[in-house]
Amino acid sequence: MEFKRVMVAGSGVLGSQIAFQSAFFGCNVSVYDINDEAIAIGKERITKLIDIYAEFFKDEAKAKAAFDRISFSSDLAQSAKEIDLVIEAVPERVDIKQDFYQKLSAVAAEDVVFVSNSSTMLPSQFAEFTGRPEKFLALHFANSIWQNNTAEIMGHPGTESQYVERVTEFARSIGMIPFVLKKEQPGYILNTLLVPFLNAGLTLWAKDIADPHTIDKNWMISTGSPRGPFGILDVIGMETPYNLNRARAELDPAYGVIADKLKAEMIDKGKMGASTGEGFYTYPDPEYMKPNFLKQN
Image 1 (tube, one colour):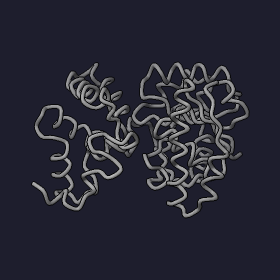
Image 2: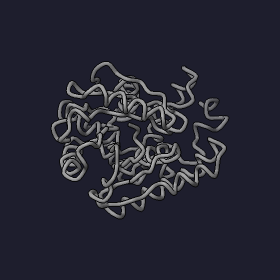
Image 3: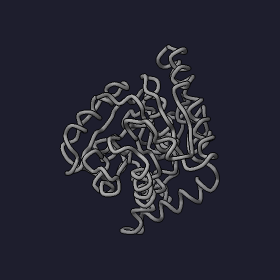
Image 4: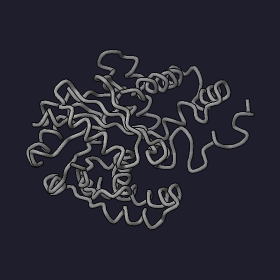
């Protein structure tokens, strides 16, 4: 049985992309967020994706039709009506996710499958709160999913194999390349590699070893990479790295230093990344993409 009626919970940067990607490939999508203000911001994000998808796929009509297949609501019960699959993309905090799954399980039909797009947390952390642990697993997307079209699929010990297979087929059906992990791993494949790299850059910044542009420039010249850690952080946005470092600060105060600096110098000043026009760089024409960036010392 195909998943054709999808609810995306959370209309942030990645939630918006997941919703549009699903709609672009033919799904009817219900976007849920916590209040009307969040919905309005999410709708604005999704509206901007029309032109991006039209240009990338060279199909303006299909991009416009995708938007018409998306509905928006801050009413959880309404959003969860007549759906096959829920993709959770709420903030990276255990308490928020646990509370969401408890409320969702009370209003979603028993046969609805739940998946989490959590970047670093494990399905087993939330399975008992879903009311359907056998139908619960992780489905993780990379940012700019129309281009970076990987889908990492990870069950927990109680996930039934049929749902891993169905979610894998769903990922293929919306244009993704699925990677099924054999067992649970915090960060899957992508973030197991990426997060330590980004935190290494943030640590250099937090300790005032070097400024973000110098760190990026060094990495880009040394490796030939198109972006350094701070260019990548701008794409991700500041909320997720802040939440991850704040959570880790309970075990290691060094992460708290990073979280505090992100909050004071970026979040509190509205520098949330590329999506807001300013992060460590200004957009849409960031310094690291200019021809002379790597030639300056």
